[in-house]
Image (cartoon, rainbow, N blue to C red):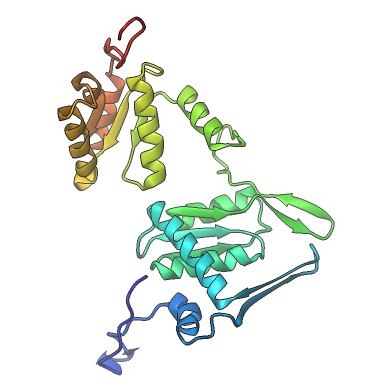
Amino acid sequence: MPSLRHTRRILDNSHPPFYRWFPDAELNTCANTLDRHVDAGRGSAPALIYDSPVTATKRTFSYSELLALTARFAGVLRDLGVCKGDRVLIYMPMIPEAVAAMLACARIGGVHSVVFGGFAAHELATRIDNARPTVIVSASCGIEPTRLVEYEIAHAGLTELRVVETMHERKAMMADLADGFLALPGGFGTWDEFCEVFTWSQLGIQSKACALLNVEGYYDPMLALADRATEEGFLRPEHRGLLLVDEDGERLLDRMQRFEFPAVPKWVGRGER
């Protein structure tokens, strides 16, 4: 969570008629909403009361409970690559998790943009195009008095939308439909998917190009780890050579198009001991 900074200056009047109050101060909405109450010993007091007449659900969250939920989701956003100043679009029904998502954005310095949960796909797509969010937070559906409203996170320009039940199905479908695998700088989710598909290359399960767009040396530590694994004998040099890396996107795409999978044996082939 960004640290708080007390002001040393009350008013900046250096550019009248544009005045700035407390210009050198810094505060955090999440800390002011939750942390200060917990720190003051009011952690068990009610912070949020959820009363839904539609679902006949009532839930009360204490300051400590809401802080824990918010902090966990702030960690999720961080793992998804959200940094200070990044935009996060929230497309959710009026549930406690929507409040936690907004507070989580504030906790790490993100900027949240709330889209009314009743909007259809076209209206949602317009707002996604305008906001260009790093992450979209949504729910499976909304509930109205007479019907269930399924949410559609789909861009109007998509030629096809495929929905799967599990992450395993998603990865398998991506591997089947993709012409190659290109990882941009990202967090744990990106690393997990890329490392898994690269392992498939190592095992001979798939033969499409695997590439890293190494913007400003972002993947240098991962490449150093791959080199160390090769030196220690955990990764064959032939397998290390399957990994395409470049800092230039067009050049990397060209290399991927020209990539031909070499005849590389598995670690232990059939009949080997």
